[in-house]
Length: 145
Image (tube, rainbow, N blue to C red; front, side):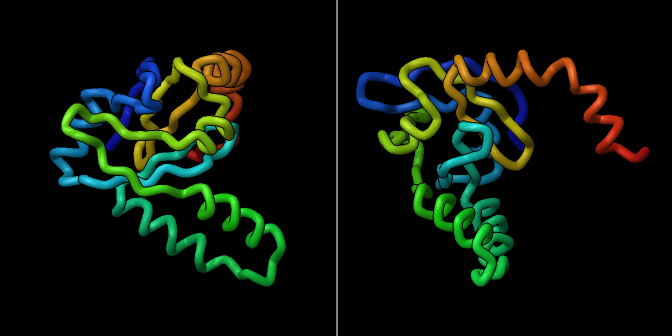
């Protein structure tokens, strides 16, 4: 669904313009609402409403008697916010999510198939620089082809 890497900026009102390519995918898939929440590795996760409901069911199925499941669900769901892009494809990111992801102005928006990740430009550069060397090694461990 969502693929690619795009650099954008947060405007003065705290809005993020979704890449045109992602807006086109959303339009073709009849996606009108997204959910944004705290992600992993200090980025934000953005899911279409349909994908969010699918993921939500998986997370709700985790046993609340397990401490790690409670912590994860609290942090994920307490940070979640539904957003509807305006006619220009802008979404408002609340300050608490920008603080979590260390986003000030410049961001990198990454399509990761079923979700969109929103990174501060600096953190994305660090992540990419530290991860690209191990890409082949990781693929050997994960892919059993």
